[in-house]
Length: 407
Image (tube, rainbow, N blue to C red; front, side, top):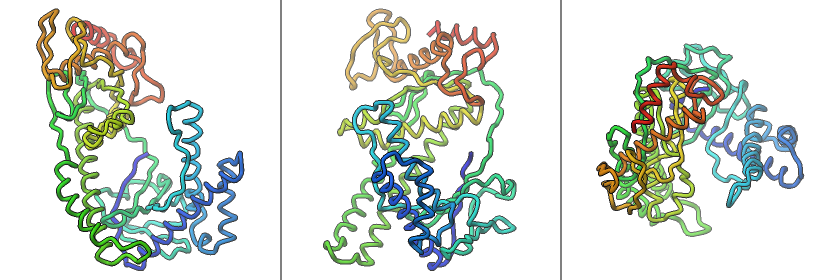
């Protein structure tokens, strides 16, 4: 499944109709959640059947396409299913009890309620919301795909306008020649990551750079904020929109940076080992929470796994415990503070950068995990986890085992 996004162009009346369709989606989603709260044991199918009742009871709900109404109820069930799953797994702390939404920003259609133009540069929404035909502008050519491959169409409202997203059922796989290279990655705040070869990737710190501008825009929006009970002025709405655009730019910068790095790392190596960090626990440190969020470690990990499936590479998540403490040459443990950036082993005399030593330990653990336990974490072209023997030929297995013992 791949997602293509296009900028949508239309009249103010059309976008007002889009806003109304989004409000209906929010209404149905919250009604479905209320039905689940009031009726113990309500299932996903009960929420789908509720859509018919709401369409018959409320005329504005009947204007929205029937499959779009089902998509709205499925959003509620998705939150409920996550809550059930957290309870079954006995997740510590809050389980994520479903909440009502008050700021939904998208409406989703399935296979009906819309029609693409002949040149695939426009889309017409045929339900009763009155959206009409929207022009599309993007870099991908939709003419290369069959209509049967279009599974969902989503209209998303963003700070800088409206976008149309197409979810296509496409099995994206690209074959690459084996490079014979393996790498371990140690993410950090000083550098975005340090690999086992000693290469350091700079941390761009997009939020830190944009912080002065964000504070200025936030002050302007706060000065124009209306008193409680009074309607918002146009100047306040403009100031809030400028602030939202700045935040959106930072978000896009983070995503673009993580995407390019992940793609480069996966294409350049046959195996990538990284730390299985618990970001949720790490951001509890209020001194580092902003910097950790700005680094986008989790997004980088997700993209690594995604590109591994596309290019047929192997990625391994290893436990992060003691990777900075253990010497990568002799295994000696030496405790040190975060301010100590150079590791000196008192046993073997090995001197190396702290992060480079950790990256070498991460790579060693990844190789040992593959060769002994047979668990590959994530393998590109298979649903199950791959073993080292399925990843490489016997000669390559022996080579990787020798590298693991040599570290």
